[in-house]
Image (cartoon, rainbow, N blue to C red; front, side):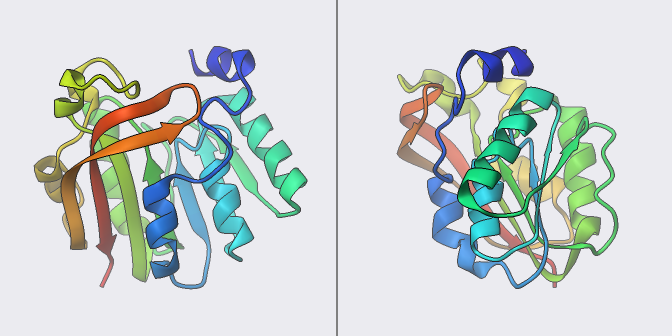
Length: 196
C-alpha cells in the first residue's frame, strides 16, 4: 500500500515538518535522531537542517527514495533504513531524539517499537509523538487509519513507554494541514517525554 501511495503522489503529506514536532524540536539535545515510519522524510530532513544526524526508517522503499531526494534538495545528509517496525532494533542508548509522527501500526508492532524506543534513547534523550486517537474517527477531518486499534490514546502510550518521564501526553483537537492525506479538524495525541 505505502509504495503505491508514494508512487502516486510525491510529497503525499507535504514537505514541511509536522507542526507539533516543529514546536518542540528545540527540546532535543545535540546528537542523532531517529524518525519512525518516516515516509517521504519531511520530519527527518527538518531535523537534519537543525544540525542533527538524522535517520529515517520506513517500510516503503519509494517513500525513502523521495526522502533522500528531499534531503539532497535541501543540502543535508540523511540516512535511510528500509525496515518493518515490528522487527526493527534501534539499539541501546543511541539516540538523542526519537520521533514518531503518524506511525499507526497494529498494537503488537506498536508495543514492540515503543519498548525498543525507551531502551534506545540516550540519558537526556527526547521522545516526540503525534498520532490520531479513536475520537478522530468521529471527526470530519481526513487522516489516519479508519480502525480504532491502529490509533493511540494517552493512557496506552504512558503504559507502552514506561521508563520515560512525560512532560506532555494529552489528547488535543486541532486543525491539521499536511498534504493530501492529513487535512481538516482532527483529534490527536501529542507526547513529549524524556529519558532521565
